[in-house]
Image (cartoon, rainbow, N blue to C red; front, side):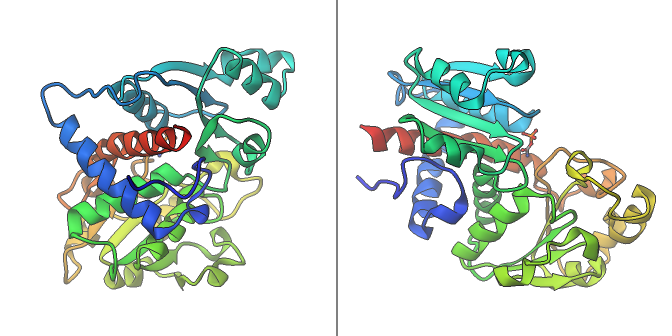
Length: 308
Ligand code: CP
């Protein structure tokens, strides 16, 4: 049996194109399972997984929990806002106490970049990074590229533009790594103040004009403005951002080719995307969410097999 080259999924940077293909092929099988009347398999019957979330989440936390339950794992959920972290307990003490209850895998979201990497040096359980600050969100990039493959047949050779707040986005960095490993051409587009200074060193094209970016691409992955991670003002107002970078259906329909519209969620409707664009035939936003469960089942299953 083929296996992953890693025992934790900390970031897309650390995995190989072969790992990504293996995750996709495993997710194809789990997607078939999810379309059956009985959507459950016994694969992780003996495994206990803790979802440890130090930051808010809707899609990622629910998607991981559902993936775990579909694999028949035992699941516990931890949210820092209702925990003893509020009484001063450290990250390592918190996780070691969870592991003392015979937990095999940790899925963790944390606001500090590198938090899951730190943990991986101190504990034995498998760790899946569910988003670490502005750094990486590997399962989001896997479900995004899997959704492009599903819609367009393959990722290699496709032109993908990531539009918006690249500076504060873990989704952007993980997507850049995943798309490049799979042979896509990547562009980033946004106000110059929301593009990292090092961005060209990642081998991506840079475009400041959203119309030109849409004319270039096959796929536009639109990001939200991450106001909660911004320490200062990067543009005059949200209204002005929408005026220059907001995408609506009229704009998409006026292009001389069909493009695919993506968004990792949560959407700020009326800011980066109008409702008529988000809900249009161009959009595969809810397909991304659906594919997230199969991708996370594949990641958990392959990491658990690594321990065996
Ligand atoms: N895409 C994403 O990570 O969404 P949540 O923050 O709701 O998990």
